[in-house]
Length: 343
Image 1 (cartoon, one colour):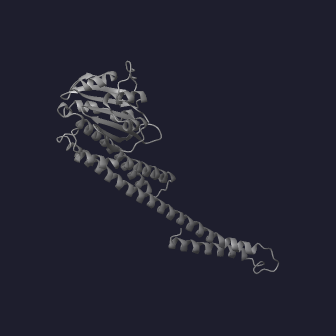
Image 2 (cartoon, helix red, strand yellow):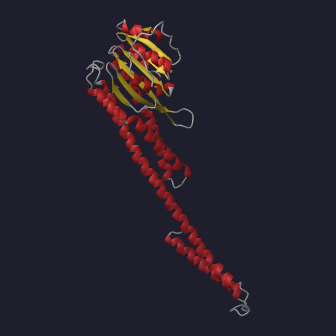
Image 3 (cartoon, one colour):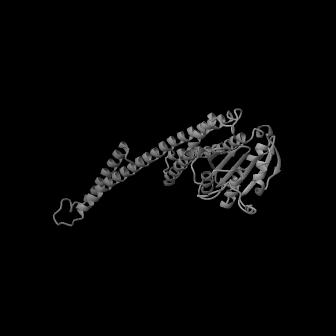
């Protein structure tokens, strides 16, 4: 476990590493007024009325300890942010809120079609610290979009949390749309009459992706619902209604995922059933041809035993009659199998 201390260490504090810092800025009345060096975060927050927004990407333990000391963050929350691999959740501490969100976006390369990541949010009076794990592109454009609406950004940390959650949840829409299009393509292949083995594998991967999405998104329903009802000075009354939009989007996406899971299950069962029917048809065809070929085989085998005393062995018309009988029986069997649908 990582540990921090609220006591002042002896001697000058070590300078935190720069790596892992995406952005560190101060805002006043919704306007960006200065970039704040990580080493000065504590003083900038304590001795001014400016709002601080720090963005980190996979920070080191040393950097997180410095952030903890600057804002007085809880040990357990810092530990979660460092180790990652957390489920979406919301935890309340004395003067801060800790929120874990899961990000998802379509992968542009690699064998995994969906890139999952995590965002840990520390929310306190006049500060927001975001810690990202996974895809670095999952937050591209968020800060710019917030700075474009200074009247909303002036609401402080509550609006930033809403903007962050809204931005992350909206990224699920193209992912779900992509999986929905893939399911439509698979259904067309299933009912086209051409059975391809890869369809079953694609359905399996599709259902696995849907399950991963649901596990990442479902807990966010409780988080957004709690934020709607939360009574905290960190979330002013005029900020809470914004979380209703996030909650509605989460419910909408979750419902779509549930529908896709049911449809993919039906598609998988239909694919297996049609494959089974096709195999039965192949078995019938093989059985029908085996029956047809058994007749000439039996007659030819009977007259090929080379016994001396056999009927019609001395008859001059024996050979053409045997051929005619074999062909006639084969034709009759063929027509009958065609009639019953075996051929």
